Image (tube, rainbow, N blue to C red; front, side, top):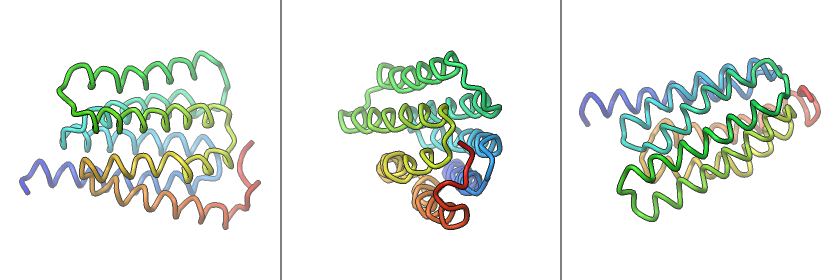
Length: 177
């Protein structure tokens, strides 16, 4: 393992810690800020390990965090984020010689991210956490294993645990609507 690999995996671990903290935020604004910061760490992690669709989608997570943190539900924000996610997967697929498995995996993660953004835009903390547990984390977990992002693998395992902890702490309805 060389210095770039160590740096890449370290950035993934930083992203993991920020993501874990985001699910403990009671207010959606804090959740979105921490999600954006974790997206930045993971974008760099995936860039350094050569998983470009993951890099691009996490760069969009930074933009999504900034757009959604104030809680206003302007449709243009959702449309911008959804288009950026679609481009974030299509461009790496078109510009590289990804195998069919990577293409399919990137599309599955894209579907999870698109769904997640719609739920985040709607602003229901409960639904954000349910979708994270049932779709987003499992899709990213597979992507992380295939591309070997140690921080990503641990992050998605901890995400699912963190969602359970947040429901224990706040109950099913203790989040912003």
